[in-house]
Length: 247
Image 1: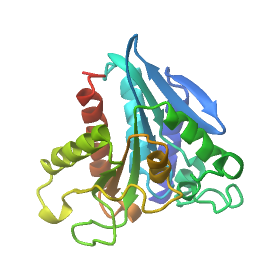
Image 2 (image 1 turned 90 degrees about the vertical axis):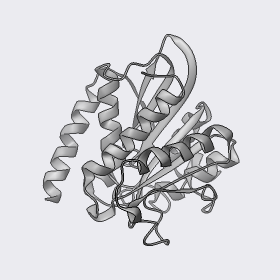
Image 3 (image 1 turned 180 degrees about the horizontal axis):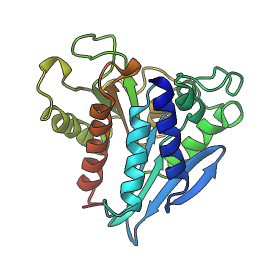
């Protein structure tokens, strides 16, 4: 089954790379940019930082195609999509980068002030984030937070900016409206933005960049991937519509 998933992911990647979006390479990550004629916010969506958390990557690849096909019409502003920050890890189904590529091989422990020399991909992401009105980062926990509080699966947290806080809390309400089981509901965690100093969340907090972290529950496929992908897509579309960027 894992080989089938890898093959499907590679096919999706090929579609992505040959899509019609304005794509550019930034230190070995591929970034898709969509820009409207009318000015507006810049939203940066990031996924695949950890290779064993694939639902966000799949969702952002689908979002890219929807924007390319104009199923989602961008009315104003700019959307930046980084669906596979850790491409090697996603293909191999492992959390970290290939051995020897980063100092500790964990991209989300590489966003410190030394990233320019120790982790060029992390540094590229930070440079992109600095020009964004909002950064949304998609990860996956190993359990449901409502059942296993040590896991942050099925949670949304954010930096304490008015924009990110409002969107995060409303996204939790949106997702929970479609979840029947009370122990699988999403939880809003407003104090999780800088608990680990070398994460992208903490770097955004330190640089005053509005940031939202969404954690579905899905490591080791403990929840059907289609559910998790749909949850990410719902939040992406909700965010863009709330900001008046799409319809």
